[in-house]
Structure formats: C-alpha cells, structure tokens
View 1: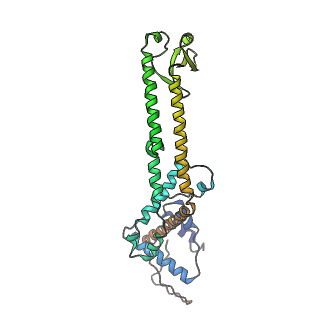
View 2 (view 1 turned 135 degrees about the vertical axis):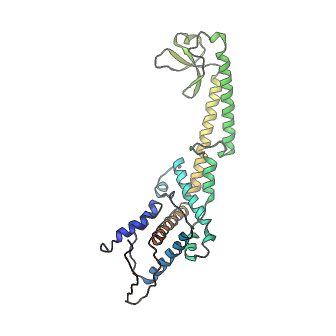
View 3 (view 1 turned 180 degrees about the vertical axis):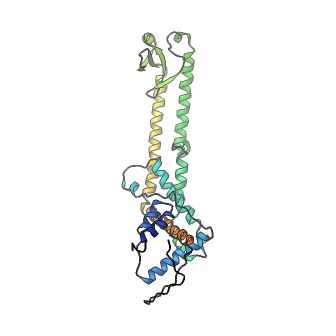
Length: 299
C-alpha cells in the first residue's frame, strides 16, 4: 500500500471534498476484493464524473456533523438551529436536482435517498433575524406581546419626559435625561436632593453624586412593563422549545440525510479527482489476468 502511495491518493480525493464529513469518508476508504462491489462503485463514481464534467455540481461546504447536538439535553440555541437549518437546506437543494440526473441513474439513485425537510429552513427564517434575534413575527402571540411592550414603554418615556420639564424637579435633577437601572426607567437625581423626590432608589453612580430614582408615578407602569417582558420570555421559550421538539422528533431522518450528504460530498470528491487525472471506469474481469494499456501512476 505504501509503495503505491495509497494514502497520498486518498489525500488528493479528500482535498476535493467540501466538508470535514466528506473528507473523513475519503481518508477511511479501503480497497475492496469483491468484483461486483468494485464494479458498482466504479460505475457510481463514473456517473458523478459525467455530472461534474457537464457542470452538474453540488457543494457541501456548509455540511456539519449534527450528532453532538442530538446528544445534549434542552432546547437548541440560535447557532445550533442555524447549522441544522444549513444541513436541511443542503438536502432540499440537492433533492431539487433529482430530475437533472435522469440520464445518470446510479447518481440519481443517491440523490433520491435524501428526504427534503423545507419546513426546518422555513421555521428558522420565520423565527430568527440574521443577527440571531427572535423576530416579532415568530408567533402571533409574540407579535401582540411586543406591541404591548412598545406601547407601555412609550407611555413611560412620555410621562418621564414630561416630568423632566416640571419646574419642581428642575433643581433636583443631575442631568435632563431618562435612563434605566435594573431594566426599570429612572431619573438621575442629585444625592442631596434624593429625600425630596418621591420614588424608589434603584442605584447610585460610582461617584455617589447621583441617585437613580424610579418616580412613584412610574412604578405601576414599570411593573406592567416587567410583567409584559416576562410574558415575552415565556413565549420565546415556547417557540424555541416547540421548534426544538419538531427537529428532535425527526432525529433519525435528519442524521440519515447527513450521512447521505457526506457520501455525496465524497463521491463528488472522487469525481473531481478522476476528471483531473482524466481517469475512466476500467473494464473488470473475474479472471486472474491483468492487461494494462497506457497505464500510469494516478499521482
């Protein structure tokens, strides 16, 4: 094997695969001894050589190993949903090319092994924005909750802006702005004026010259805002939990797709290398005879 530089040959194939999973299959390739298996494998690669030579390419750079995700407990986070959706998209894209392989039946058979799950891609796009934040439109309930939060926040800010303009607070304010402490709206009040402002002290500045007070008039609205935010958190958890469940319930099918995608990546790697060195499918015989015409080292 070393005399034939077999490992170097595998490296050339692996380098032409797109994904780590495809490269793993290439580096694990072992010679076969069964003539029927050898001929079938060669014809299969020959089909993909034809596809690749005629521009019928599939790419698998985004293919990831999902096994570790399915071994953990709890709901997936945005990054985990993202790579699951990427794998799902690869399956959908590859499966959509099935008809293009109609003249290459063995290659088409491999494409047909894929089970498209477009709802995973669609669910991901429906729930998350490009930065990974949960969209308002992720559910009708979340849309309503966030509208309520926006309305309450607007009321709070308007009320506090009016307070900033009140003459009674003019000499008490450290600065004329509304801020937040511990997720509650407050006013910056001079330390010496704190006893004269009716409200709840939420924090002090590092210099202790400013006290951040939640005015008594604002407390009920701040409380209402916090309750709405708790509703928001519960609804987001429900959305992500349901999406996680819809994915984990199809674990076996998703992992089969992953395996089939990795094999397609490997087969394309073989095809690209074969076309690079102008290799062709040899005629195999079951007799102990060997005739080499124009043979040369593949490397």
